[in-house]
Image (cartoon, rainbow, N blue to C red; front, side, top):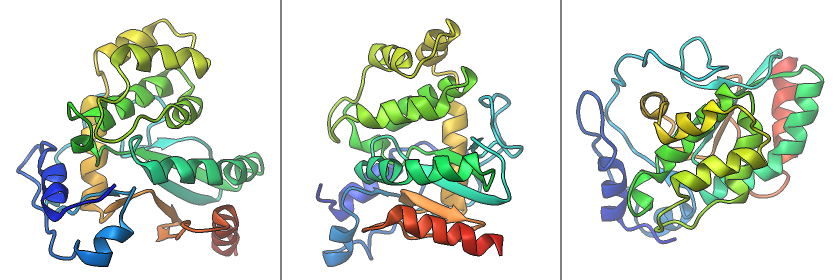
Length: 240
């Protein structure tokens, strides 16, 4: 995927803000800098006011409603993911085994932040939000991580329509969801306002790319090789 400055601008400005439009600076996103961001979800936001948290949040949401807590432990690990982002799929696959081991030891408080930075990269626009809202519905059914895995396994190509509403509902079966209310939750986009809020807070907090991984508030570079090892070492360092 080749990102042109105008495309970066349109991607971000296409997302509706509660307070005012997001402004995008594409000055730095040229030449090699643009090439380095291929396959990543990019947003550069000057808006620092995400507004009030929505009244409705999915099961397992953190107290501030900015993410979904998947485990409890001594070290907090935050994962910012966009379901249309190819590198997010790669990161989820690379880290899943290590994260499971850390969770079994009770070592980490894992918090997922499903953001919608790439809404403008589906036609019609909005797939990132629809997928994240469906994942939040899966959280209500107690199957958020399972559904996240399936979403990445079935990840559609950028610039396409994304998975349909019907497909998003049917994927619930692959994730082991038996709750009959899951389908109506997905079809009604029940958690769309929450996804917008999570995305806006992430941008306001300086998260400008997906995937972003933080350990105790410090960013960890999990690109390249040995992603699991990098995460494990960062968690071990934070526990000292």
